[in-house]
Each structure stands twice: as C-alpha cells, then as structure tokens.
Length: 74
Image (cartoon, rainbow, N blue to C red; front, top):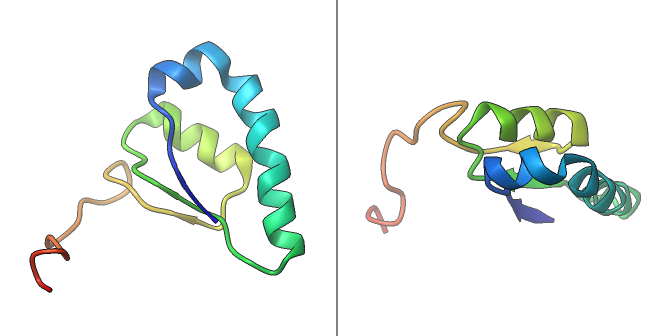
C-alpha cells in the first residue's frame, strides 16, 4: 500500500483523525503480508506522523534528496 503524506497544515489541524484513519489500513496491510509505504515526506510534522503511524518504508526530502531524476533516466 502506498500513501502520499498529507500536508503539514492538515496534520496540525487533524492529527488524531489522520492517525485513526491510517492505523487500520497499516494493520490490514500487515495482516495481508504486505508493506506500507508513505511518500513525499518533506517536513518535520509529516515525519513525526509517519513514525507514530508505523509505516514500513518512507520516502521524502525530509530524510534525503533524490540523487537523480529517475524518470529522466528511462
């Protein structure tokens, strides 16, 4: 399951609602034997939400910028 990280403004205004919506999806994905991936994590607020939600994999500029544009390499 792949999810795009919500904007930091949305996280600040409705953090508990996001957590209660995302947690069951992550738990279902784990029961089915899959991985949960969140993309476009670019700010500290998004990173905190990701850490508490329990995603398996995380991608975004907050952690590391892409070294190359993979779409241009195709």
